[in-house]
Length: 280
Image 1 (cartoon, rainbow, N blue to C red):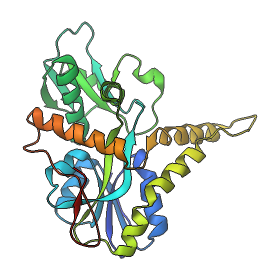
Image 2 (cartoon, rainbow, N blue to C red):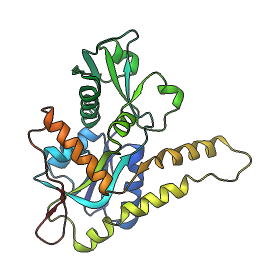
Image 3 (cartoon, helix red, strand yellow):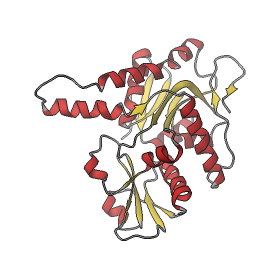
């Protein structure tokens, strides 16, 4: 799963997930000298803590754990206002009480998001059983399973499951912020900062434009696959504005209330000039 380009320049850690591709491509276009590392979110988080990269697309949970070390690039993030079947709660048939939840340890943010929703909406606090595998194998060891799918998902694949992203959208009328572009203090020049902080709007416009229906009368399998990919990416936003900041604050508040975080972190934006500023 791990891959890296071998160009010299600043290191950028990007999850090897489809929704992160537009950010990787946009940064690479602006900064061809940057070197990119891609891997599962949990593995990249560990590498970023070890300062093997200067920038990384990290989850809100990872930011909260290390907020004293990291700063956020303004105006760019990954968030979703619409469930796409990528984070699902599946249950054994006839289940009345969820006592155990099987979950992949590579996706800690999604696990915490599901736990918060179960606690807040269903008054359920299941024990987490770390387990990697398909839905059937996860349900063989637990009452319920948190199923992570990393690309385009057919609606028929999750008709009998609860979409965690949609639940958050409905409960709080806010997007789910999935990824934040973070950097180490002093890692980005003023010129780089100016370019990076404008990428969110550019990416957003690009993915929406790509998702517009084409006028082809006949569709090849390749065209159908490409169209599904574009429509999937268009379900995400790549801006970091007030709704996304409000969602971050709510996530941090709930995670603190339920004992997952030791404190509520400040949302600190990077600035090439001191002092750093906060959005709290």
